[in-house]
Image (tube, rainbow, N blue to C red; front, side):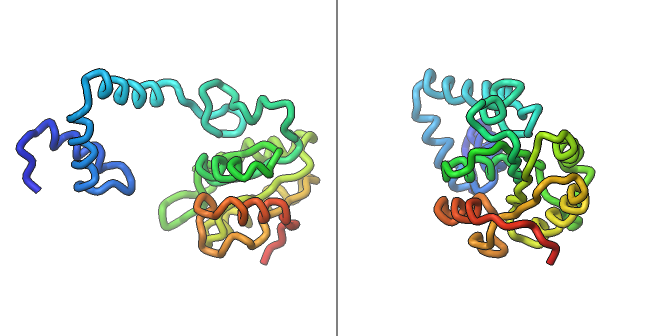
Length: 202
């Protein structure tokens, strides 16, 4: 596809670097932006820059936040004795959309995947162990995707946490094996949380 402008070509190149956006879709978006007013484009660009500048990870759980501590961790109505362990921020958003979970979260920042070069040392695990040892946590829920990598991570975490005197549970298998948690429908995810079971090594 020959584009008669290097500026449009550069913009297409940047947009198509985003996951799920091919060159044709990127070109359509760029041409749409080109037809907008200068103020509209400036607002669009400013929103992206402000997001990158101001959004940070919660220093307590790893969730996204505008502040040092996220709104979930600072909410006095949440049950801080229950921690739901998830792979990334998209899983937090998926569970929150069910409106059925009232505990707090711990975002690992990934799952163990030797094929992708991700090991335990690359994940946010030490602070989870510290929380389990604090004496204030009664239950830790494993809410990782039911994939081989998710199960491997669950097993590793269980070995790290099993002697801490904390109840360890996992989602019921209402979420189909091999499905990423963020793509589960809200009703299934909600039921999987409510019907969670003590974690057992298969």
